[in-house]
Amino acid sequence: MSSDPSSTNAASTEVPTGKAKIRWLGPGLVAAATGVGAGDLVATMVAGAQYGTVLLWAAVVGTALKLALGEGVGRWHVASGTTLLDGWRRLGYWATGFFGVYIVIWGFVYGATAMSATALPLNALFDGLSVRYWAMICGVVGLIMIWLQRYRAFEKVMTALVLIAFVSVVLIAILVSPNLGEVFSGIVPRLPDGSVVYVLGLIGGVGGTITMAAYGYWAFAKGWKGPQWLSMMRLDNAVGYIMTGIFVIAMLIVGSTLLLGRQLTEDDTGLLFLGDELGEQYGQWARIVFLIGFFAVSSTSLLGVWNGVSLLFTDWTRSIRLPHGKKAEAAMAEAAVGEQEEGAEPVAYKAATAEKSWAFRGYLLWLTFPPMLLLFLDKPFGVTLAYGVLGSAFMPFLAISLMLLLNSRRVSQEGRSGWLSNVMLTLCSLLFLTLLITDIAGRLS
Image 1 (tube, helix red, strand yellow):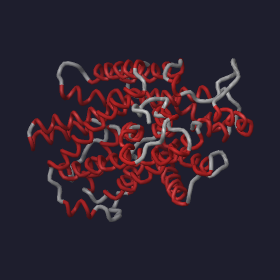
Image 2 (tube, rainbow, N blue to C red):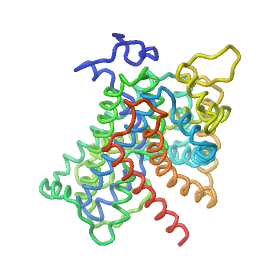
Image 3 (cartoon, one colour):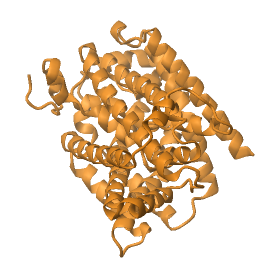
Image 4 (cartoon, one colour):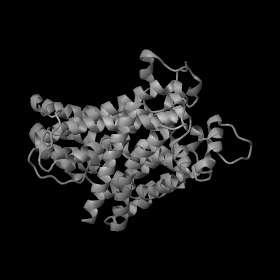
C-alpha cells in the first residue's frame, strides 16, 4: 500500500482496511467544514436563543439528511468513475444550463460574504483595519494559497482549521455548563409556536449547499475510483458529518445557555456579540478562544469554496463542450475508460490537471476580485434576489438529480441506491422543496 494516502496516484493501491482507514480520512472533513460557515453559526445561535435546546432534534435530523446527500454525491463519483457534471450532462441541457447560471451568480455574491465573515473575527482581535480591508486581505491570501498549493497541502490546512474550530466551540459548550437534562430532552421532536422557520433552517443549514457537490473531486484527488472504494468513502463522509453535527449541537447549547430570551441580529455580527458575552462572564481568554474558532470556521468556508467550487466550474466548462442527453452515453463510456485519441476534445475529468487549468484560476479570480465591489456598496437588490432564489433551488436540484442518477443504469449495480438511501434522498427533496417555496413566498411578501 502507498505510504502517501493523499497521492493522486492512490487509485492503483490496495484499499485500506481496519485502522489503516483512519489515515485516509480527509475529503469528508473538508466537505463538511466547507459547508458550515458563519451564517450557519448565526442561525444556530439565534435558534438556541429563541427556543433553548428544544430544537436540538432538528440539528440531528439535518446532520442525517446531509450525511445521506454527501454519501450520494460520493457514491456517484466513486462508483461511476465520472463526475456529477457528467451525470447532469446526461440528464440534458437544462441541468448544466441551470448550474452554469447558478455558479456564476453564486460566486459573485458569496465571494463578498466569505471574505467579510473571515474578516469579522480578525477585526475584533486586532485593531487598526476595518472589516472591509481585512476582507480584501483574506480574499487575496485565500487566492494565493489555492492558486499555489495542491490537494495534499490543502487537505492538511483544512484539517488543522477543522480541529481548531471543533475544539474551540466544544470547549466553550463545556465551559457554559449546560443543563444536561434539558439538552437530552431536546432530542425528542417538538414544534413550539413559531418555530417552523427555525426548524427548517436548522435542518437545511447543517453542512453546506453547492459545496456538497465538490466532495467527489476531493475523493478523486485521493484516488478513490471504483466500487471497491465505497466503504472507505462512506466512513470518510460519516466522520465528516458526525463531527459537523456535534459542532452544530455545541453551538446550539452555547446560544441557549448564554443568550436564551435575547433578541439577536441575524447577520454575522451576532457572533461578535456572543464573543463579548463570553468575555464578560468568563474572562477575555474565553472571548479570544471563541473568536479563533469563529475565524477557523470562516476560513474553512473560504478556502473550501475557493478550491471546491472552482473545481466545479472547471468541470462545468469541460461538460458544456460535450454531447448532452442521449448523445452523452458514448462520451460517458469514453470518460470511464479515460483514454482518448490524441487531439480529441477532453472527455474524462483529470484530477491532476484541473487545478492548473485556466478555468480553475479564472473562477478563483472571479470569486476574489469582482465581489470586492460589494464590500463598498450595499448588495444590489436584483443580484441578492437571484442569489437567494437560485441558492434555495440548488439543494432540491441536487437531491432530485441524485435520485435519478443513482437509481439508473448510469451507475454500476454496487453504486445504486437501496431503500434507505432512497428514503433519505426523498426526504431531502421534500425538505428543500419546502424551503424553496417558503423562501420565494417570503421574498414576494
